[in-house]
Amino acid sequence: MSAHLPGPVMVAAGCGGTGRELEPYAGPDGLAGLDLVTRSITLDARPGGPGPRVVEVPGGLVNAVGLPNPGLEHFLATELPWLVRAGARVHVSIAGATMGEYADLARRLSRAPGVAGLEVNVGAPDEVGAGLFEVREPYHSASVIAAVRREFPTDRPVLAKLRPDVSRIVEGARSCHEAGATAIVVGNAVPAAFPDGRAGGLSGPAIAPVALRCVAEVHRALPDVPTIGCGGVHDLRSANAYLDAGASAVQVGTALLHDPTTVARLRAALSPRPDARPEETR
Amino acid sequence: MADERGPVHSSLHPSVHVDGEVVATKRVGGYRHLTLTAPGVPERFRAGNFVAVTVAGHVARRALWVHRVRASSAFGPTLDVVVEARGSGTEWLAAQPVGARIAITGPLGRPFALPKDAVSCLLVGEGYAAAPLFPLAERLRERGCAVSLVVSARDEAHLLSALEARRSARSVTVLTADGSVGQRGTVADHVEDLVRRSDADVVYAAGPHSVLRSAAAAAERAGAWSQVAVETPTPCGTGLCHGCPLPVVGEDGVERVVRACAEGPVVRGDRIRWDALPDALGHAQ
Image (cartoon, rainbow over all chains, first blue to last red; front, side, top):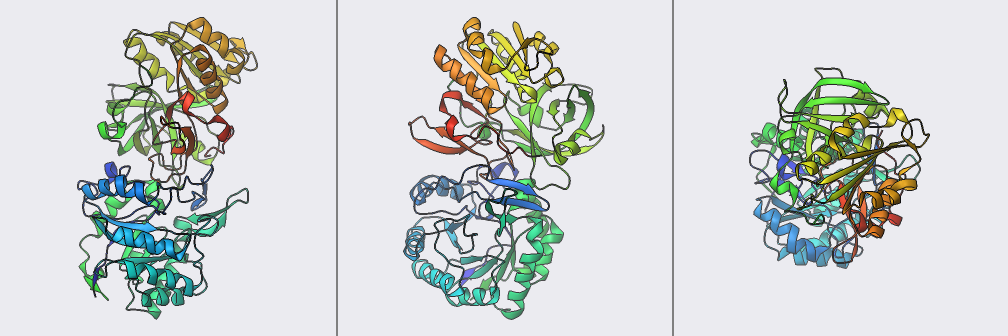
C-alpha cells in the first residue's frame, strides 16, 4: 500500500477560496502542480456564520467563518472540475455531522475524477464547526479516519488534520495513522474568543510555536508517521522550522490572507528539497 | 441597462500583487490622501474596484477605495486613495511618507455597472467612502450621462472634495449633518427629493450601510436601478477567506450569502437583504 505524499508546500483548507481567487497570485504556473486543500466540504451546503467572521488580533486572526461551502453536489459540479482543469492537485477537505457522513463524502469523492486525496477535518474548534461530529477524543478521530479510509482508494492519501491544542496529540496522531491516515496535519485554528467574547478560532503566526511543538512531539514519538505542519507559515524561516522539526510538508493558510503570493514564493524557494520529501510512505 | 454585468471581472482583468510606492501624501480635512504607484493596478482599474494593502505588523489587510486614477504622471500611472486614520493600521498607512514602499493588491472586486445609454444618474456618497463615485462620475460623463452628485458628511472636515466634484458632475449637492457647509441634514433626509429632482434612471451610492439602504430604497420607489458599493471589513480583500459575508437575494430569488469583496463590493441595491446586514459592523482598525 503506498500513497504519494503532497508537499512540500500546500494551500491550507479554508484559505484558498474556491481556487479561482488564488490563481492570479499563484506564480507563473498558476495552480498547476500545486497541492491545494479545498475549504471543508460538507454533504449539504452551509451558508457560514454571521459577520464579523474574522477579526484581527496581535499576531493572528480570530475567525468563526462557519465552514461556508456549496455542499458536495455543487462542489463536484463546479469547483472541482475547475480546479482539475487548472492543474491543481486537489485534496478535498471533508467535514461531517456523523461518521456516516464522512464515509459518504469519502465514497462519493473516491469516484470523482481528479481528486488527488482527502483531508479529514477532525480538528475544527467546536463552536466554529458547529454541528460537526465530535472528534476530539483520539478514539473518535481514529474511527472517522477508518471509515473514510474504507471508502477511499489506498493509493491516494488521506490526511488527518488534528487540532494543536488537544492534550494527547501523539496519541491522536498514532491512532489516526493506525486507522489508515497517510499523514497527520498538525495545526488548525486554536479555540479562542473574539474581543466581544464570541467563540472562534485563532490562526496565524501566534499559533506557530504551539503547532511546532505538536509537530516536534509527534515526530519524536512517531518518527515513521509523516506529519505536515500548519500554523503561522508565512516565510522560508517559518516553513523551515517545521521541516527541521521533522515535518514532510507545510500548509500555508492565514499568510495568504496577508499576502496572496505567499504560496508562490514558498514554492519557488522550497521546491528543490528532495531530502525533505519522501516519495512514498506506508 | 445598469443591472447587466459582463463576464466575471477577475477573468478579464486579473488582479496583481505588487510593490507600490507612495509618491505624494497630503492631509485633506480629516483624511489623508495618498498617491501611489502600483504597477499594473491603475491600468486595470474600473470605477468601484478597491485595493488592499499589507500593513506592517498586521495580519489582516486594509481595503481602500480608489479616489482617482491617473493614466500618466511624472511617476507613470498612479492611483489616489483616501485614508481615515481610525486605528493602528490606518494610522500606520496615513503616516507613510513619500518614498515608502507598500505591498498593494488590486484592482479587487466587481466595479460599478455602467449604463449602455446616456441616462440620468444620481451619485450619492458619504464620508471617505464616497471616493469611488469620482472616477465613476468621469466614466458616466464620458458616456454622455447627466450626472448629479451628492456628497455628504458629518461635518466639513469629512467631506470629500466638493470642489473636485463640481468638475465631474452637472450638479453637486453638499450635505453636512451639522450644517457647517451646504445643506443641513443626512442622505436619508434628502435622498427621496434628490432622486425625484434629478429624474434619475440609475442611483449609485457609496458610504455607510444606512446611506446605501436609503438610496436603494428611494431608487426603488422611483422605479430606478441602484448600484451600491458596500463597505464591510474584508480581512483579505481577495475572496480567499470568506470573512466578509454579504446577505443577498440572488437573481433566482433565493436568499444566500456572498462575499462582499469578491461578489461585491458593488451590488444591485435591491438585491441586498438589508435587515440581515448589521448597520455598524466592526471596521478594521
